[in-house]
Amino acid sequence: MLILGGIAVFVGAIVQGSVGFGLGLVAAPVLTLLDPDLMPGAIQVVNATLPLFTLAVEWRGVDWRGLGFAVLGRVPGSVLGAFIIVYVSVYTRGLLVAVMVLVAVALTARALSVPRNGVTITSAGFLSGVTGTATGIGGPPIALVYQTAKGPQIRSTLAMFFFLSAVQSLAILAIVGELPGRALSAGATLLVPMVLGFLVSKPLRRYLDGGKVRTAVLVVAAVSAAGLIAQTVITQVLPR
Image (tube, rainbow, N blue to C red; front, top):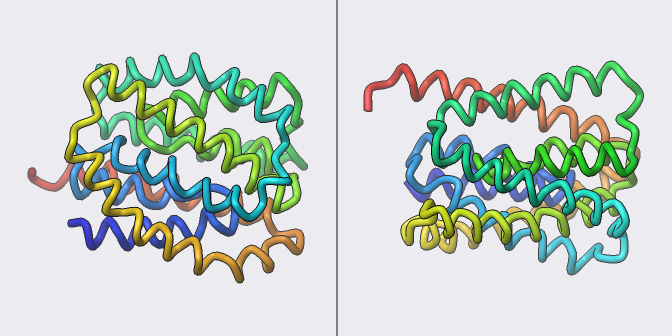
């Protein structure tokens, strides 16, 4: 099980290392399918670690003002996400997140960009808090707001936001009793493929920084949301 999960984390780390987000989008559906009891704790351990590697390289690009608004919205969103994780099934959560992401991508693709201001960033932080805490997938809302930013800025700002978000989510999961020891140990094991994936992402960062970040963000979000829907349907159909 951890081998398949490790492959998913490896691929997700390559995506996030290049675009700025995507680890949860790629790995969370696979880990949920393999062992729902590990989620979202296991992926949050990885989510809290990978941003540190990005920040070590590109910390100067952080948009501190925008980060403040995002964290402001993230706190109440995380509380709502904690209630969802207690009262809503993991499969229903995945489906709701996937539909939300697809709608956001469709609306964004039709417009030139999403305005980046205090209101939109705080709102994105709130949605990210809800979905990140409930499913381990909190990247799309905040990434869609920053899609027109330059590569280093979007990667570094999202990295700082994801680090703070993951730590917060882990604390909330522990408080509500949804952070078993198995999830923590599985997350620690997945750190090895995560590091390897980040190292592989370096050549892709140079390619995407040539004006292709926005397209990459939309494509990654849409494909991953479709994968979440497929995963939800499969888990409902297959016998347990």
